[in-house]
Length: 307
Ligand SMILES: Nc1ncnc2c1ncn2[C@@H]1O[C@H](COP(=O)(O)OP(=O)(O)OP(=O)(O)O)[C@@H](O)[C@H]1O
Ligand SMILES: [Mg+2]
Image 1 (cartoon, helix red, strand yellow):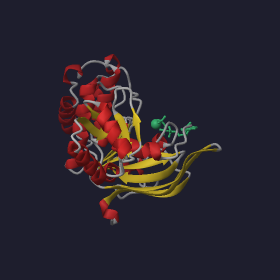
Image 2 (tube, rainbow, N blue to C red):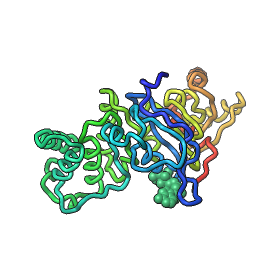
Image 3 (cartoon, rainbow, N blue to C red):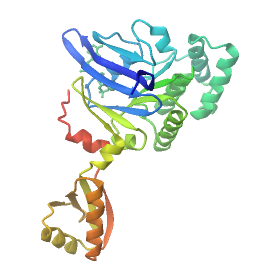
Image 4 (cartoon, helix red, strand yellow):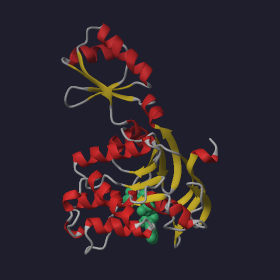
């Protein structure tokens, strides 16, 4: 992949706080125009890494290019191309939702007319029109989160960096967030997103970078993660014929509380064959699905270091 196809290339990026190494030699790329997830346990360095990419925190060592520029030496070029949505939305409480957006537009030197228009458009997109002229402090947590997304989009950035954007959102808002993210990516915006809700990411992202204790430990596309899933959930109307058959063919399984079984089958091809064979035995299967999400299985296989 040439540099022009990449929105981020990070090479041995590190950040130290005192003697504590928060990010250690992180190396990865983010392709232009897709959705990439940054996944890792608490304290693995996701927020620290995102702050460095957004040009808001200086790395201790290493190098990076974001949208073609160096966040350290070409900070304005990066900040004018990147939209940043922090996990905790802080803002001047006395401003209204609309003012918060137009103020942000002003910092990006948008004209007054453009600011007003863009603010209205985004308030509509995140369903805050009815709160537009309320002071931002009356907004609920999820509404503030949605205002944070609108703020990150104010200058129509080439790349969006979203730190746990679904935090505090109700189910409908989460679905809408997924729609907005996918739509932005489909029209050419690059999205880098962190979240702990991996099942949600499965439906939204193209690939994922995994962090553990500040290091980039794995990278996987969702398509590959799906292909390599190995634990499958099977439930039959009557469990006995299923269990007898599994014993007969020597496939290891674990029986669940609801009479479903978990079987280890590596890869989707083998899973499809397993299902065909089971049906050929007249076993009345009513549920057959991968256990957990694709990214979740990869995550759990990693040697996780929580801190
Ligand atoms: N300003 C700071 N000063 C000192 N230590 C810090 C600072 N910022 C982050 N750290 C430490 O660096 C590590 C990584 O923190 P970071 O916030 O990047 O993790 P995270 O992956 O975003 O975690 P979470 O999933 O909980 O949001 C943590 O152990 C944290 O305590
Ligand atoms: Mg964080």
